Image (cartoon, rainbow, N blue to C red):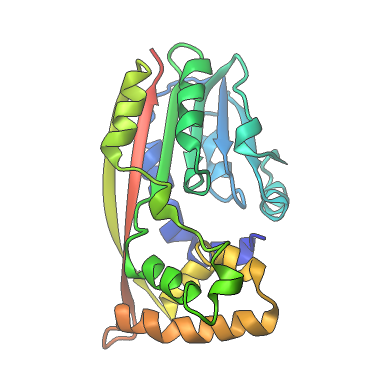
Length: 254
């Protein structure tokens, strides 16, 4: 279960890659703009300001996120990305921080590239930090003897799902698209107690939270907190640097 409020705790930091992805989309007057995985809609609702004449289509697999997006004025609906097919007038499709949750997303990208109309844009961004301590420590703790019986089946292994920028460049190029692929590591300054724990609680820890009762969740967080604090020490001013690598690809259908 997604918690829109927790996800929005770091709305500015989570939003920056979205706008940098969007900045590489060269569509001038698209007929339909689609946001797959719109989350709570805080980013999606900015799209009409860029493309005011476009039909806006948005979806997310989480009913909680869709409810939040609808409350923000976004015409969102609950839908799995596997079930989405582009309408004939779809000129822009965005997928921001979604496909890391979809192991077969390469097949989806190939299908979308083949189904989108000529000249359409397909833009994606996924986290690329699954080897970082923030994620490695979660996997190690979840795989420990005390937690493995419950958590081993559900722990998120994005390192086995997400590829490197050149892989996505090759994928789109092989589909005949023009493609721009790159990576960026954001060095984010987080505030508050246990800030990295709070950050991952809104994303990477979501499957673990869903698998645990309240007492077990509190205990897991208590065990994880000092591990993250050691890996990401606080500065003298109380803030913490958190490096976050992101992978981008923007393709234009021939």
